Image 1: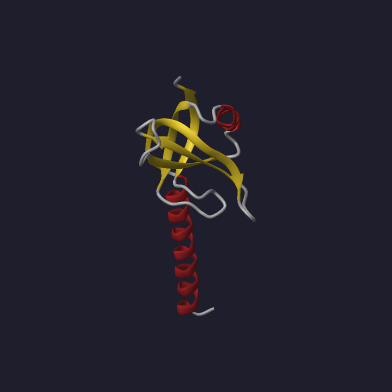
Image 2: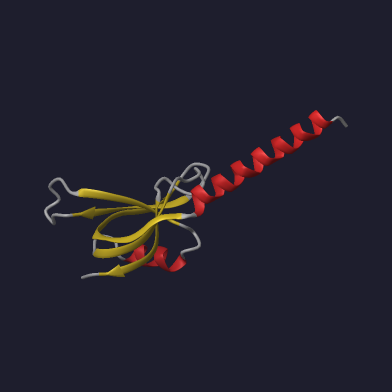
Length: 121
């Protein structure tokens, strides 16, 4: 094997490994963590190929006039959060989330991943 071919293969493998490490970091690392509160308007499992738990929180005014919407995703591994969100529909809640840099289609529609839910009222 010639030196050029050998170094070409090493360079190609290095580029692939760097891309995989970058993609893993961007999709699994938390960009920010925090909480939001509001009324849970929608929570459902959706998707044609990739089934994910998606929700929507109505923030701001109680009278439903121009509310701010917070859309989020819940991982299937967060069983307690899924159970709580199923029970808290239409109630005032506080959700704790981790924001990702970006996500793959099978991870969910939102970059906000809820890991804990607390009933406020």
